[in-house]
Length: 131
Image (cartoon, rainbow, N blue to C red; front, side):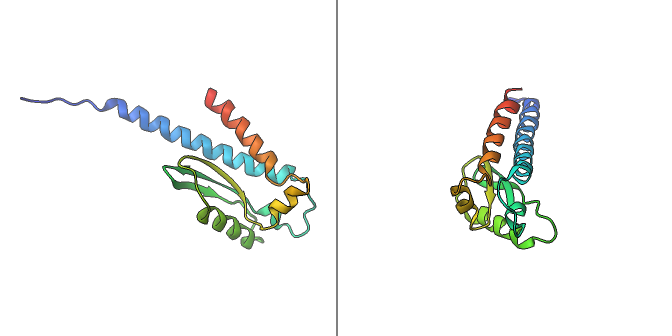
């Protein structure tokens, strides 16, 4: 007996999944830019403004991470990368982080460091995934 197989439909699923994760990464990048542009705090050292980053997590593993700090703030980039790499990760999703240890303190004083970016990302994901 000869069995024929047709796997042609799986290519479309792989392409759709790649587009989904690329969209999540685009939203993460936009959210980081939002945080840098609209952060409501005084930027004394420029570390807080250079530390925002994101990671896309698929099946519990980081598949893309970006912390677009300028060349003068490599320490800020490293703090965020370490924070993301060593922190708890969802099974699937988007992580937004600012690795500066005082970022949450600044947020607690009523200044927007990352919360506005998180709300922006949530709205953008909802909008883009409806299309």
